[in-house]
Image (cartoon, rainbow, N blue to C red; front, top):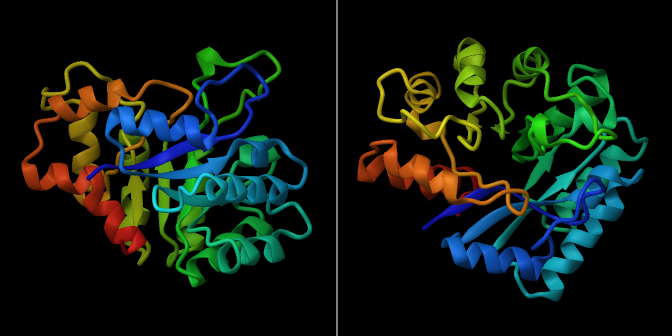
Length: 265
């Protein structure tokens, strides 16, 4: 089984996307053998009211009878006045299984009181928090797009402030982030997961490779698969898996076992 931690449905304002609907994304998942995928709404990232995008996402999933393939995550902006009501509604009424934050688009710090309160609430509700380091690589960005990425020093402080909340950190230099967060991660109850979408494809078998560094600092029980569909092809992720030299048991953990445990599937 293969579970993907990072996919999107919706419109991207800076270039045309293909396969950015439920039908299109499902077709790519079938092509790559992805059984289930965490999905969030790109529209929610850019709407003033993120809840409108969250509703659109659920409607599209339901209209295409794809509830058994998608694990929806809510995009919430803690600087929006109705964030608490919206988040609770997403979980209790819309069946969303995670929270996704974009401080570099919504222009707030993860350490601000509203952010901390939201993340603590997620922990109390047993809802994991997904922190994408970026959506697209800085080299591919439109000139009107943000130049900011996730601030790792803020993540480190947030982990300490919210010790019971589970986190997923994706689409960044995960081996470097895991090393920075290693100490604080050991001091908390909540788990921290990383994908490997941005690790160097080459020299994966080398003892000093980025993938081996990620395994050493995060542990194989905290590494998950993420494709970033439909923004990029998933093929490089399979190359990384092929040359990572994982045992059958560890491969099962990375491709599905760790996320099955997180989502209690």
